[in-house]
Each structure stands twice: as C-alpha cells, then as structure tokens.
Amino acid sequence: LVQEKLDLLKQNTNNTVNSLLDTLALSLAAKVDAKIKKGETIGLLEGIPFGIKDVYMLQGTTATASSNLLKNYKSAYTATAIQKLLDAGAIPLAKENCDSFGHGSSSENTIFGAVKNAINPDLVGGGSSGGSAVNVAKDYTVFSIGGDTGGSVRQPAGYNHVYGLKPTYGRISRFGLMAYASSTDCVGPIAKSVEDIRIVLNVMSGKDIKDQTTYASAEINEDSILTSTEIKTVGYFKNFIESEAINPEIKTEFLATIEKIKAKGIVVKELDFFKSDILVSTYYTLAMAETASNLSRLDGSNYGNRIEDKSLKESYAITRSENFSEETKRRIVGGNQVLSQGFSDEIYLKGLALRDSISESFEKDFKEVDVILSPVTPNTPPKIGNSLKDPHAMYLSDAYTVGFSLGQLPTLTIPQGTETGLQITAAKNNDELVLKFANFLK
Ligand code: GLN
Image (cartoon, rainbow, N blue to C red; front, side, top):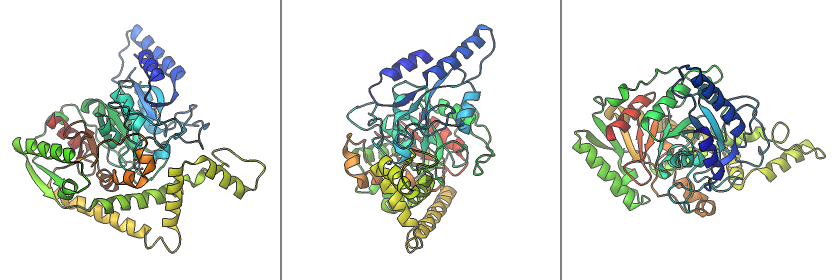
C-alpha cells in the first residue's frame, strides 16, 4: 500500500507534494511487514500511510512552509502530534504543498506551484492546507495532517469534498507546528470518514509539557459517537445565510439541509451573530499581528540564507525582502502597523476586545443550542489565478470559518449539505458532539 501510494504521489499532477519521504516511508513499512510475518499483532494505525502539511517538523526532513526562505531548512526535531502518529505506526509519505506559512485560502501562495482541486483541476485546491485535502480526496494518502488557523483545514476539506476537523484549541499540541497565529493555530486531521477522523484525533490529543496551552482530554470511543440522543437543538446564523455575498445555490442547499434536520425532530433556531466584515477584520487584525511577531525570527541569522558581506541590518532586509512572498510581506507590514505605537490601542486592542465579545456570544448561543451549522464558505472554489489578483476577496471568502477560530471551538467540515460542505460546531471541549452530529446526518 505504501509503495502504491508513493507512486501515485510521484505522478500526481495536482501539485500536492513539496517533498516525498519515500526512503523513510519504505523503511518504516518494512518494519511493519516484519512484525506481521512474525505473527505479532499490529495497532490500528500501523502501516497506514499519511501526509503532512509542510509546516510540521519531522526530524531530518525539509520543512519549507512552501516558502523560499525555508527552502533548504531541515527539521532538527519532530512535532509532538507527528511523533504520536509515528509511535502508533502510521507511515509518513510526503510533506504537502500549502500556502506559504499558512497565509492564504487557495494554496497558490507557494513556491511549488498552485495546488489543483481534486474534483475540477481548473479550480483551486483551497487553503492553506490544499495539498493535504487534495491528497486525501484523490486517495493518495489515507489521511493527512493539516493546520487550521482561520479555516485552513475546514475550507480545503470542503472544496475537495472530504472531512476536516479543527479540534478545540489546545486539544492537540502545537509543538513543532510552525507558528502562524499562535492564539488560533490548531493541528487538524483530514480524512474520508468520521471514524478515521476520530481515530487520528485520539492518537494526537493530550497534554504536552512543550505546549502550555494543551489540556488533557478523554478519549472519544467508537460507540459514543454513534448515539446522538443529546442533540436536540441546532442553531444557524441568520446573517450568514441572508448575506448578499452568499452564492444562491449554497444558500438553497444549506436551507434544504436545515429542513431535513427539522424533519428528524430536531428544533432549529436562528441565531444573531456578528457581521462577516467584522469577523474577517477582527481575525485578520489579530492574525497579522501574531504572524508579524512570529516570523520576525526568520531573518537570515538563525533561519534562511545568511548574507555574509553586508551589515546585520542590511542582511535582515535582503533576506526578508527577497524571500518572503508578496502575501506574507503584506501580512508582516499590516501586522507591524497594527502593533505599532499610536495604532495598537486603536486597532490591536480593539481586535482583542471584539474577540472577547465574539467568544461571549458563542457562550450565550451554546446555552440555547447543542451545535451550530454553517456552510464552510459563502462561495464555491475560485478559478486558479483569481485569488492572487484579489486578496481582499480571498479574505472575505473566510467569513464563515474565522469566527469559530476566534472562539477556539471544535468544528468539522463534512462533505454534505452544500457544494463546499457543511460546518458543524460545538462548545469548547465538545469535539465528541461534533463527530456525533456528523454521524447523525449520514
Ligand atoms: N485563510 C486564512 C488566512 O489566510 C486561514 C489560513 C489558515 O488557517 N492557516 O489567514
């Protein structure tokens, strides 16, 4: 199976791979084979091939973040989440193409060529974990590990009709995941079934001394997600569905799903929520501020190309201006402005206050409803090339995913309900309920 998938990945024309881990994969697969030959029992994930978004550390292999700056960077250690998968016997096949540093919604902001959608190659693969979602959709990997800061697992999963989970913030350790916006970065699995998501989530979850935001969580067992008796009330945001920006078909399909749910005896409530432009601007204000700070270490002295014959200051400037993409530079400049004296009270602190209000609004909602449903995006996947021409339109396409990120809530995309999928969200730490609801809808 490993060899078969490696061959498929090597030949794929969707630009999903940054580097192939063939030597490592084959040697790990041989160990599993030897175990089977000896008659030893093997674990649930042993020998199962998976992909890794190229923003995770895997010792001895390149970790490029799809950027020129880290083109030759080799990981000195392995991310906790990835190590847990390796310990369970899963076999890493490839580092997967994505938007550079997670900056984007289309997987076109990459030095490895735009990721092409699994269903229609003229369209984008979605982003930023585009390569990961396309690999799963095409069966090149059994599951892939993406990263979700503002929708980067859920949106590409939706665009390629597969499942993608952003767990509750802190459920899975971020140690060894390159930081984009640390307060919303989440490790997220992409797979072809709720059951596969459950298994991989269980393996990666747990408290980690190397990430102080992690917490211990109970394992989610197979039977518990097959019962859904506690789901009695579902909510959705009226203003998302009534927005002028929503594609009419997505709206019709979403409302048809709501009718189906009502027919199953569930009470559906319309909820009030913040307008999309407030959600998008709050998210991008904070995400840009955090990324400007996180990426300041990429200056050519520790990471990136060191320029020897220039002053330190010149060397920083040359390394950063020559090697960051336009989109990443836009975010660094924006983030530094947001954080600078004279602006930070007006913009950054306001962003933090809005984020608190958004979280409070969710807390209030989850007193009334068990889960919240939403389309994944207001739009269908754009044609390749369009998002690069119009970054503002690209930011607005994140309208339905970023709010749940700011709330640090568990939220799952399932390939149902609308062309870009349905997003199921529950209260913090209630990842199990999200999986239950996905099964209930089947
Ligand atoms: N599209 C969003 C952004 O560019 C989300 C990206 C992500 O989750 N990494 O910030």
